[in-house]
Image 1 (tube, rainbow, N blue to C red):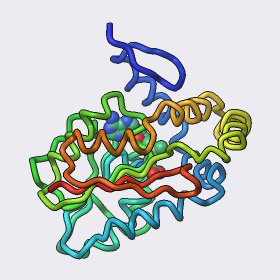
Image 2: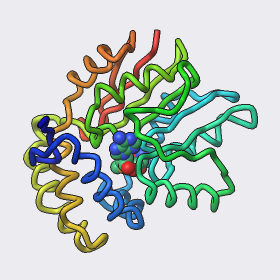
Image 3: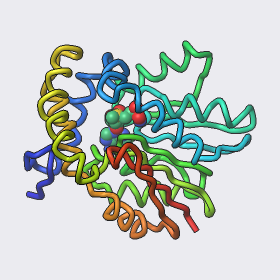
Image 4: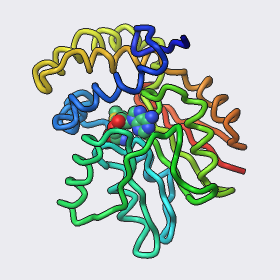
Length: 243
Ligand SMILES: C[S@@+](CC[C@H](N)C(=O)[O-])C[C@H]1O[C@@H](n2cnc3c(N)ncnc32)[C@H](O)[C@@H]1O
């Protein structure tokens, strides 16, 4: 039996996706409000920076992976124009439905697919941009998912990976206190679910740090990779170019 981590627990590799699904089924309806509370609104700035770096042009074909409630998909849709296309995807139907409803309320209708980033149902070289925000951390085989992202990008295309990352040393103590003491309580009060937010804190610690993720992206086939730390490394945006 191959095992992997689910937060700090070792679990059967085949069981991780089901557990991750349980987390997002549980939090889907309160996800956006929790995001604003937990990050004190900062996730909006992190995403705005990602959209700026994505440099989406009219006519671009864009794939948003693990798109959840649709923040990036919505911002991209406003930039691609009528000749472009944004495809909004996630492995979790509850998250995707919440996102689709939000987008429709904003007057935006996008092609929406339930799909696993590790087995993307799209042809090679079919997108100019691929994004994954706060999703890679939850995937069982990150190497496979990164290879799939590279496969569906056209040469010259850009992958944007926005993810919670390794904080700078001076912030570590305060960040640990906030993640392990405050977040689960907030999760319990607002979303009625402390465990999912404990998993969030643990999964961040198990995620590859900035330099490791950069080299993983290189191994997945990206010819040029760079990253930008934000908020002292709480979050990093990795950008990979398929050469
Ligand atoms: C923290 S949410 C991020 C949602 C959105 N991108 C955002 O930035 O607000 C993480 C998302 O990753 C999705 N996810 C986890 N594993 C996945 C996989 N293997 N393939 C696609 N999506 C996945 C979850 O269902 C969840 O919606």
